Image (cartoon, rainbow, N blue to C red; front, side, top):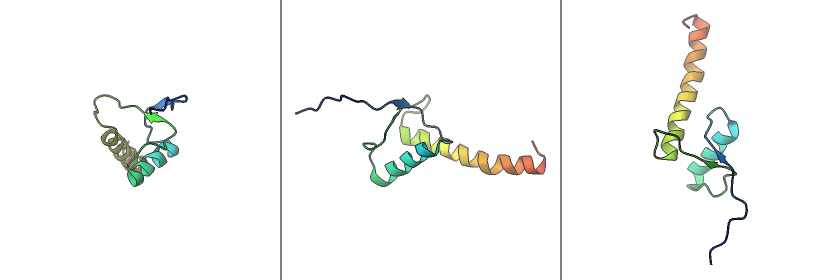
Length: 77
């Protein structure tokens, strides 16, 4: 029997700056399922797979966090 979804999860775009979004991705990597995630992440263009999109956003987030700070500190920006 198919259970009707009475309460669907809200949609969200993954935001690497959002700690709860990062935590949900961590849980996904540990469990290999989004079933407990309180939101449904939507895939943005040009991506076709959510994990690939999230990986790219996280790399960009941490690179910016590391290298932008150093450039500002050294006066290179």
